[in-house]
Amino acid sequence: MSNLSTQELETKFQQKIDANEYIEPKDWMMDKYRYNLIRQISQHAHSEVVGMLPEANWITRAPNLRRKAGLLAKVQDEAGHGLYLYSAAETLGISREELLNQLLTGKAKYSNIFNYPTLTWADIGAVGWLVDGAAIINQVMLQRASYGPYARAMIRICREESFHQRQGFEIMVTLCQGTAEQKAMAQDALNRWWWPSMMMFGPNDKDSPHSSDMAKWRVKRESNDDLRQRFVDRVVPQADFLGITVPDDKLKWNAATQHYDFGEIDWTEFHNVINGNGPCNRERLNARIKAHEDGKWVRDAAVAYANKKRKKAA
Ligand code: 3HC
Image 1 (tube, rainbow, N blue to C red):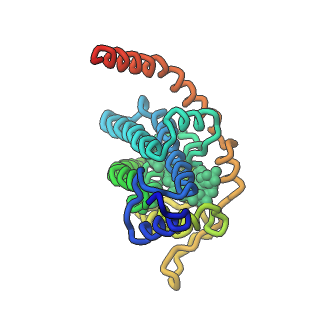
Image 2 (cartoon, rainbow, N blue to C red):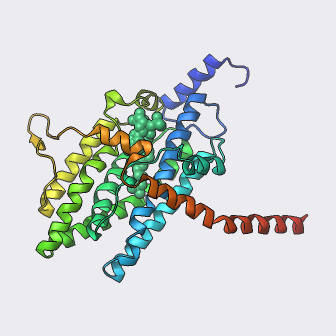
Image 3 (cartoon, rainbow, N blue to C red):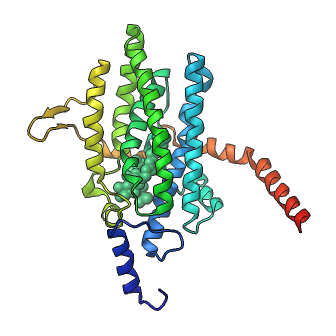
């Protein structure tokens, strides 16, 4: 391989992707591909880890033991997803320390959705139903991403996300079949989580700077807008089943396209949130910084233990 020119290496690299073969860590890859994968996988890892915060907030207040156990398991799963994804990013030649540093200094992005507060128990239902529901729609496609370690991590993540979506929907069913007050809580949660969930798929295709490269490299196999449309088509009948209303007066079934038409997303809000100015950005970052500082003694102890073992073995 080393005798080949850059042009030839690039051609072979693209041919491999076009043939649906995985790119593995030791394979030659374009710098731009490596950079963009680190960008996406690390943002994804940070989203999983920051995403634990709004839900963990409700573990001690879950309405019964069954709900508490389910939520506890879900939050723990998200930590695991973060670990698989940080490990996948590390195979691209960046250290865990650097990745965490990017998050904790506010340099790295993470999903817009985790910068909103969870105000009532119904929010835990809505997050599972809508947020994990949106995440699955996006992530099923990533199981076939061209980078092997990322695609393989996504397979396990998707299985767990699907449990998360179901536990959220089940909470919504219980609330919607409960008292008028409980149903009102469910409606209020849908009102607040609908639009931020729609934003999770990223900007419209025409305004998405990375989409064409990510599609050419088969990291993204479907576009932001196509995935968003699938989400709407899937969730609206579920809201009908629950007997609650999606907060969009432009939402309408279109018999010609066989899809729902929907209203315009507030992209100003999206950009504010992803650039650090959402309702909870500072709170989320401070919580991660505190957790990192509080965990220092554990990392120090682990390193000291490993060093001691190494010395003994030598
Ligand atoms: N939140 C925050 N930033 C977002 C965003 C969102 N929902 N959508 C797009 N952006 C950012 C991009 O990261 C990019 O910023 P950058 O140039 O600084 O890196 C910019 O907006 C332009 O967007 P593009 O559409 O051009 O970017 P991408 O091609 O990377 O597409 C994406 C965005 C669809 C989110 C893609 O990165 C992706 O599929 N990522 C993997 C999935 C992921 O990260 N999911 C997080 C969801 S939460 C989760 O999984 C936890 C679960 O438990 C619920």
